Each structure stands twice: as structure tokens, then as C-alpha cells.
Image (cartoon, rainbow, N blue to C red; front, side, top):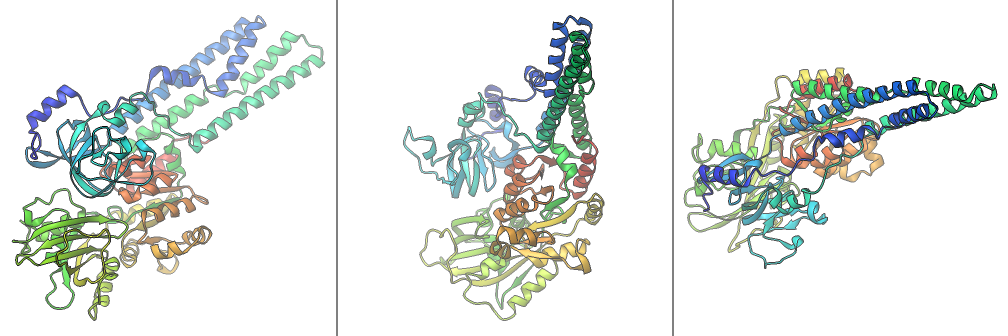
Length: 622
């Protein structure tokens, strides 16, 4: 194996020899599903009735109850087993891919096809697909709580560690199942499947889903019927005995009453309904990972969604550069601050949407390539959601070292020494046009060799990069469909408030008088829970909000509503987990897809509307 990775022939040979990179399934086991049928309170009552009938010599009655039990258990087993198989099949259709170097070229492959010796690239939000040895990293941190219980992200680097180092101190390794919380890395696969640490742990474990509100309600309803049946049976037996009826006749009569009010086929009806609902939703391109989330989707009355790719096309295109003052070159400096290094002859693959759009326009091979010859990259700090910036340290052709900063205009402006007259007006005009704007600034770096974790002061603004993400043609119709189902839509975005309001107003998503109520991340941070709960109710747009703030907003909205959340980024994972029903997209990040209950094959509000409508009619409410 070399830095160019395995060729396809060697990778295929290793895959055939070692097997796919996957863990043993704990899905729909025949005996597990069958035994679960006998844990139903209704069935317990039937068993009791059959036993008493047999004990009193009424074999015919015992036989009839036994037949009912077998029919109910059998039908429940068939439908629940089929439902679990359906959920398994749908879950397999949710794709997980990873960037792998094969034959010297980057390509995306299914994580199941990874083999030992593959060179992979992982970045912010990636779930580590196998045990990896880090070859190179930029500000890399991983959340290893799934293995170690430690909630604080752990710094990772390529420097080797001594043999026998404890699991929690393997700073040169990324372990299967952990999550990249910051930075990116190039690494080599050292163990896959059950040979990985996570795989060895998971091999002996089964997975049990937590009880949902729907399941708890169904159990309470069944227990209520059981107690009613027992109470009636006892009461009728006592009355008959007081009337001096024969004991056996009185007992059999009370048993008949108890059995008569028992809904023997309730479990079968529920599992059949949910299984049918999941298949119906699959035809609408809505994949259900948790069957009981069908009921939650149908009950949803508030949907919080991101803007990009949902209300807009999600296909970002670079529109123009707007220099600050005379001589500014924001496009050139912005290109140098991309994740891929344009001066090193990279392909630009695997970058975020904005960097990819800029690269396509002014990168090597683009329509108007920017001059980057002779520039050498010294250090890179990838984009992070805390500072909302990325930065790079470069040497120019004349050897002058410069730090380039790129990110949200407010974050960049905060470390700039001064703004040119009119810059603020220019920025607001770009926002008013509904454009996504990135600011670019530079500062002399002297002899610095490493970037600070946070950008220092003293930058000079070079200008702005404007990107366009046009509203979806069918977004307005989808919003009307959701409104017709009684679902109120709210937008939570990391974008600028003016941009978000412009898009929402253009799609008819507004309040009384055409106003679009807005809360910014700064305002959210200043409010306690009680005040935020009141303010969030009429708000339609939450702008410049952090992942933690999104989750907090969803949590507070749930106190009064059944809340769905639609998102596909790593910054959406907390909110997806917090919602009554989390909805992600097949093309989303691994973290988002794993946190979601429902996965869309296409990021389309119309699919959510159709799923909500279908979910409302597919699941019985106890």
C-alpha cells in the first residue's frame, strides 16, 4: 500500500478475503419476535382464562380461547416480523459513503467496501467508518464518548503513541463509531468490521430501541383493558355466587365476559397498520427507520427546517466578487483559503458547497482561474461552527507570508482593524438580494508557522464573495400543503437574517401583514427558557443560530407542540435528536442520518408533507 492507495483489483481481493466492513445484525430474529408476542398484557389475560377453563373441566371453552390465542399470536408474529424486515430493508437503503484514495484518485465508496490498507479522508461530521491510523490531520478532534464515555472531544494527530497505550489515549488513531467534531484527516484503515474495537464490543450486543410515547400509550391502554376485564370477572363472579349460582357456571360466565371485552387482535392490528404505513411512505420516498415514528410524523404540527436545499435549490453557484475599496482581490484570496490547495494542483473534490462553487468558477480549470502560481500553503485551519471562519497561512511568490481569513461577514468584521466607507451598505444590499455572502480578509503573518485556534485581530478586509442559491420551484406549493395539514413551518438557519427573510417572504412564508418575525442567535442567547418559549411561538425565522441553540429551540417548542425537525448537517444532529420526529436526507452527513428517525431520498418539503399526510392516516391511536 502506498499514498496512492490500493488499486481496484487489490481492494476487491481483500474485500473477498476479509468480508465487508459491517457489524453483525441484531434485526428481525424469529424467536425474539415470537417471544415478544407473549409479553402483551392482553395475551396474559387470555392465558389466565384458558387455564381456568381447563381447570374447571370446560375443555371446549379452553380450546376456543387457545385457538384465539394462537391466531392472535400468529397473526401478530407474522405482521411484526414482516414490519421489522421492512424497517431493516429500508434502513439498508440509507447510504453511508466515505472518500477513499484508490489508484491515486479520490472516490466515494460505500463504507461496507472498505478494506485494511485503504487511505481515507474524513472531516467534520463524519462517523469514523473503521479503525484508522492518522497519517495527516488539521486541527483534528473526535468525540469518543460511544467508546470511552468521555464527552469532551479528544485531539488527534499523526504522531505515534507507545505500544500498550490505553484506548482513551490513542491520540494517533480514529476508532470506528466515533465522530469527527473538528478538523479533517487523511488516515489508513487498520481494522474493519468485527476486528475493529467498536465491532468487537458490538458483536455480543443486541440493540433495543427506547420506548416511544406511542408504544407506552399502547401498553397503558392494554393494561387498562386487562384490569377492567379482571374487575368485571371478579364482580360478576361475586354477584353470581351471592345469587347462589353454581360456582363452576358462575366462573365460566365471568370468564366469557372477560374474554369478550378483550381486543385479542390489538397487537396484530397495530403492527399491520405500521408495516403498511412504512411501505406506503417508502413509495413517497420517505424511509422510516423507527416504525413508531410514523405516528409521530402524522401528529406533527410544527416543522423546524433549515433553508438551504429545502426552501432553496441547494445548488450554490458563485455569482460575483465585491472588492472592498480599490485593488481588493477577494476571489483569489478566498480560493487560497479553500479546503483543497489550488496551488498544489488538487482536484477540489470533497469540499463544502461554497468552496466547491468558488473552485468551479475561479479555481484551476474554472471559467476564470485566479492567479495562484508560486503560492505555497504553510498551514490550514478548517472551518468550524464556533468561530464561523476558516483560515490559511500562505507564502506568496515573493516569499511574503500572509494569513487569509474567510467566513461569516460578522465574524470576519470582528477581527478587522477598520472598515472602508460604504462596506456596510454594500453588504446589506447583497443580503437584501437574497445572496449568501462570505467575507475575506488578510493580514501580514511575518515568520509565523502555525495558525492560532481563533483568528487574531488586525486583519484588513479584502471584500466579499457572493453566492446564489435560488428558491425551489415547488417550495411554495409544499408550504401550502403543510399548512393545509395544520403544520406550521419555521426556519432555523446559520445564514444571515436578511437573506433568510428575503427567501421566506418570496415563498409566502410570512406572518400577519406580510411580516416575517425573526430571532437571531444573539437574541436567543440573551433569553432564558421561559422568555424564549414565549418568543419562539410566533417566530418564523431563527437566524445565525448555533447547533445548541437549534436543539434548545426544538426542546422548548415541544412543550406545546409535536415538533419535527428537518436537517442534514452535523450542526443539525442535536436538534434531530431532540425533536419528536427527526427527518434527515440520504445525502446528509452520517451524524444527521443516524440521529434521524426518518430519512428522505430527496430533500424536498413536498415529501415531508406527503409523509405527514400518510402518517396521519396509517397508525391507530390507542
